[in-house]
Image (cartoon, one colour):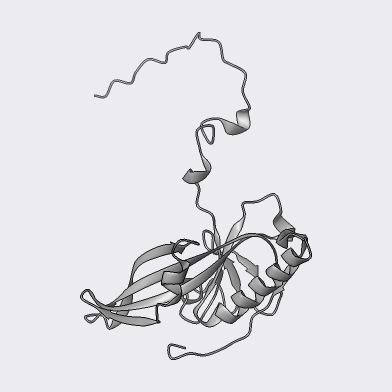
Length: 194
């Protein structure tokens, strides 16, 4: 037979506190959070494969929620940018490239990474490099929520460079990038994987 513990009454006075934060966030730092990404869905994307989205939709990476359907515009306010290089190694057993690492591109290493081609043969095997442009942004319809990171690379590099050019022009006019609402739309393109 199991004996249950006797309830104990706590006589310690309760300190006043915001009940909305009880045990939830008082010790969290910003480094403890995941910043959600805006995923532009493609035919082989997970949310499309799971039936939650269609190719061309913009989705929240954490929830899968559709932020803008492919026929609608996604409005964003950009307040920061950074570049990364994603490196993948060829896996001959699976006949595909597997993720290896992501390197942040800084002013210290930008020239070195600018000379890297798309593919390289190394003692480790065949490597594939994908330069990605990342934009910290808010959605005007959700300004009180966490910011997002919109990552553009591969077939979306041209769009990223266009955004960068517009941000540069704004800076030349002494205007911050966050002073403009950018509208993104989907345009279907096909590559060798669909």
